[in-house]
Image 1 (cartoon, rainbow, N blue to C red):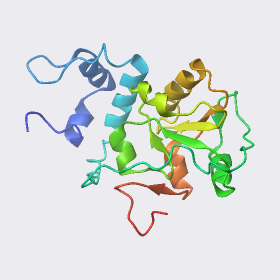
Image 2: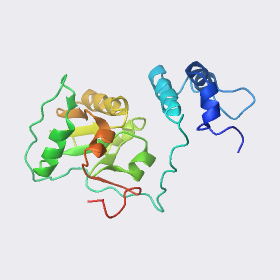
Image 3: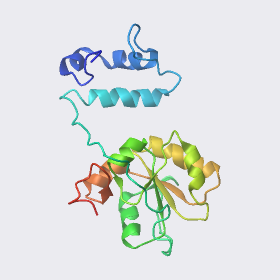
Length: 203
């Protein structure tokens, strides 16, 4: 109500990427828009600009809102299961198909959603817990007992990479990033749950 909608097609047709980037970095004088140069790095600001540019064809759909916060299940999935046999690319990335296979085989596993908590509440990989990349203190509740831990985001690697980097700094031995991220997970029809998932499709 105090400015043009950011998904306004006319605005986006006139605003260059450089203008959007500068607005995020320096804010907009005389408006409530703050400067984010101290809060976001260059890659994150570029991600914001790319996200805004994706609205050029019209406003994004209004996300469903939960009447109450979603509740997490257990941290460790299939606690009596065996150890997954993952093949990591660059000693970091695990394919979505291998993670889905491990879940189908009831392997012992921890899934971490590294996105903002509201994204987790709307929809997340079934069984994943929420540890936003900017709130790494929440990793204190994750057991360091050799269980494989797979983190994911929608970037597909930035936020989950932050979580895995912190786990490795803490000495967790088996950690990986979901290579394709949650969007490809959904495209393949793999199970998700959350406030925005119709009950008929949730597992």
